[in-house]
Image 1 (cartoon, rainbow, N blue to C red):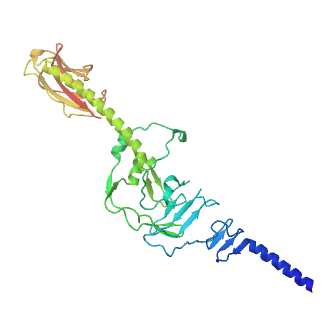
Image 2: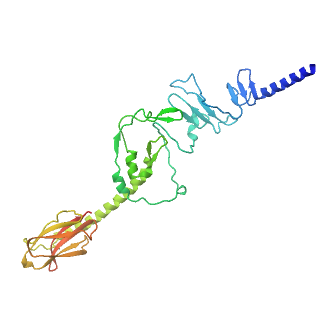
Length: 345
């Protein structure tokens, strides 16, 4: 009987010793789970766990001393020796959540937080600096943007104000995705309108609402400006040639010998298909032609003119591109009158 009692006591002591090694309650009431001693990191806290920990359902951290002006409850991740390496503080201060990737908030500027995957921010976000990955080595299927100016002209900027109280479900919670957005009149685009023109810059989020990548529109604007500048340059060149033609008229290069000779402006002007021209050519002048030329003076077409007053002929844009052209009344090799017209198809 004594032997059985001794064995029972020994087994009990062994179990207590083993349990004590895994669960220790220090003299100050603090508890260590998973082994360790009073020098175990953070053994000065009420509960220290040496090993992996699982929590089913919800874990709440409360700081009853939290005020509007103070720091809230904190979750800290640090290295084993408390050096601050790989240290992250999540601080739920009043009305905000703050991440400090460093030993304290004082050295946060030298640290970084990396997010892999999608990140949804519901509310207003601001930052002092940043950038987007745009390295050629990360891209493929690179092609030149075409028709950028036409797309920009189709975009419609608007003024608007954000709605309030728009709720979505995140997990078990109802979240107001507009609670942190600025008040008052705003300006921008409507994502659905932009999607109809440039679908590449619009995404549909997991909540079903559409987001717009404003920063990528800059590429479209750059190419649109380049296209517009090319058009401006072409018009400037045409204007230079036209001014030279006008100067030649002033110098008498184009002869207007008789007031009875007339050549009216085509109607309509500009035109896309056909236009009519009224003219008068006295019989004393003989046969004449209407010569159509470009601004450099190169003849593109000729039409025979009938002699007489108040004649009408028709010209066509069929073989002409958009641009500015000249038509001249020519008799016996002399240019009597000249006018310009515009093709706009």
